[in-house]
Length: 456
Image (cartoon, rainbow, N blue to C red):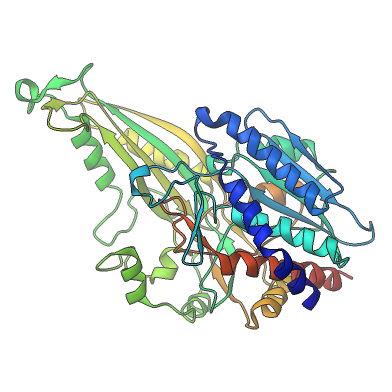
């Protein structure tokens, strides 16, 4: 609608300035030294909702980081849309690879560079500004609720308790999440599913202390060597995961689904150039999009042990560590897969070392039915905003709370992400295109209009 475009054009610099202010807050949920920043950020989100026109907004404490809840209720006869997002961000390490400070946002070449610019402050803030646009232009056609949490990047450990204790507060007709990506702004897409997650940490211990590698090397097991061999054993020559039972519950995609996925445009040369790699890699027999969407994976996220400082130190370390995650697809269970990972690493440990496996967090895979009113409304909104039919795709990331929301609230979820896979999520120099930010604010109101009309 022209009235939305006009309002946005008149306020677009202010929209950007407000987002930049939010990005300056180092709301890193994984680090205890940022606990105070989490509360500062939650308050800032609450204030933004009030200024945008919400009837009320509050910061709700949990056993961890707080949750922000707000709502704008216009008519009990109208459908209610629950917006979920998260204000917490990943750690910014390694800091030396950033071209500018991760919490000193800059706009360069039409892109916002800052930690959280796309994941997920920039994306949930589109909904805040969309709310403002609809309120100020008197065009709001639904009731809107917001649930913006501060623990998504650490597995949402306290969200389940909050949801179970606040079913009436969260009562709605659909949940919309903008924490995913599009194929491109020229080829808009909608994620119809996200993968689940299992995350563990493996600790291998040899001797009771670090040893002189000349005196003891060759006679005492080296935990780093052992851990490296254990990790290497998790894949075969075709990059197929070898852990017993790992694929037992995998729902294999049909040839028809794979054919549809193959219609999505993919420029492998540009993909490799963007990443600075010579070739793609992965499970034999599957395309790149299939490997990151319909297939489960097992990845090494970090490994360390021994001496890693400047210069040399000939040491045989006492311990070695690795952080390992598995991305899961329907109908895999994060509980089952975590148990299999733990059992595998314990069972293959050789004599001479002990293995301790720590379970971190997980989440279940989720699929959105394409025949739902929510999906159809989202597809219509994308058509209005982009002038093109969106392509349905399967996302490779994980949003652990999806299955929780559906089981506890009985609601379907629709994904309307406006980021790009190339936005350096979880990496140095995370970015979010200004075009994407403004296009999201422009498109989201169409979803509310279509969902209200289709829900009659």
